[in-house]
Amino acid sequence: MAAALFVEGLSKEYQLGQLNGKSWLGRVFSNPASPYPHSIKALNDVSFGVEQGEVLGVLGRNGAGKSTLLKLLSRITTPTTGKIKQKGRMASLLEVGTGFHPDLTGRENVFLNGAILGMRRWEVHQRLDEIVAFAGVEQFLDTPVKRYSSGMYVRLAFAVAAHLDPEILIIDEVLAVGDAEFQKKCVEKMKMASRGEGKTILFVSHNLAFIQALCPRAILLDQGRLLADGATSEVIQQYIQGLQSAQAGATRTGTFLAQLNSIQIFNEQGEHLAIVQQSRPCSFVLEFFAQQHLEDVGVALGFNDMGGQRVLSVWTEFQHQRFSFVPGINRIRIRMPAMKLMPANYMMLTYLTSKGVLVEQAEDVQQLVVVAPPMKEGFAVPSLNQGLFNDEATFILE
Image (cartoon, rainbow, N blue to C red; front, side, top):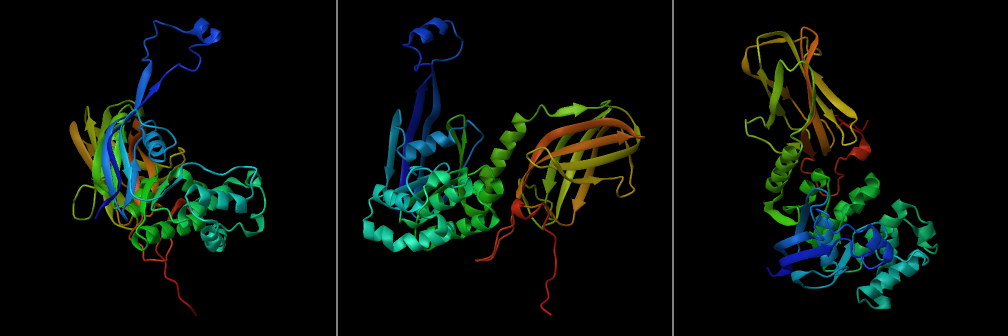
């Protein structure tokens, strides 16, 4: 199958400090001896291809070059070096209200976006009812979009981008603005667009569970370079390992008579996991190095959401258990019969005591990614909009 989008040797270099460099104020406050470079490469020699009908996930930490890549692909800015080849029309949804004029009504913006994509007025008119129904803004269609809420804005923007027949669709993190019902509609629309309509989709998100559910393949950017390109689960694993390396300086307090060395995650077959599937069994193996013999050892493993709020704890005290540690390596395996946390990213922490005294508390030691199980077509994907946990239940029509 021919590539719908091909990127070769793409680089983008920005000059720093140029805006004020020629003004009198800029000259007064400029520092010729500054140790910082006068230019920075936001993207550095990136090459990849995307096949027609493929959904490609784009991963990377903040500042990795994701936004720069999308702006180059969308022709918002031009590359310093490199080539971009595309087959067909491209629509981009990079932020809330991309391509909308705030003083125009929702209806007028739909026709404006259609014209930008090269569509005739009658073609846009044919799809207008479907766009409006998808966005759920019928009663506000003739209201200027500057009066829309952020949710209404993004619903209409996504509906326009997805329904006006672009062959290539680029979507940034904007879906996080929508509620659970809208996210479900977006996921179904993107799946239908790629599988049924043959559209090519580039999807950028920090929600790894979302990426795992939507994208069979992903690329990983780091400091402007393409670090990985392959199966989504493998790329996510590499991404998480990079995050863990960056988080090596976790916050630790206590007497440090024993310290956490590592946390490893395994499935029920004993295979190492990078991501955990919701509702599936898993084990967490905590390895501690003890300086001396310790008695009455209590161990806890906690999970925080990305805002730092504790959402789950497992603790030996809850199970009426304690251990003895010998000098050297000690491993504690925590078996969970089913991972019940909703699909999302979490940060793990550990808590270790001996005879009631805090030996070590290690915060933000490792990230945990929980992804949704395979879902049947037409059913919702679990998300944090529906709560923190998803437990098994039996429903009976009586």
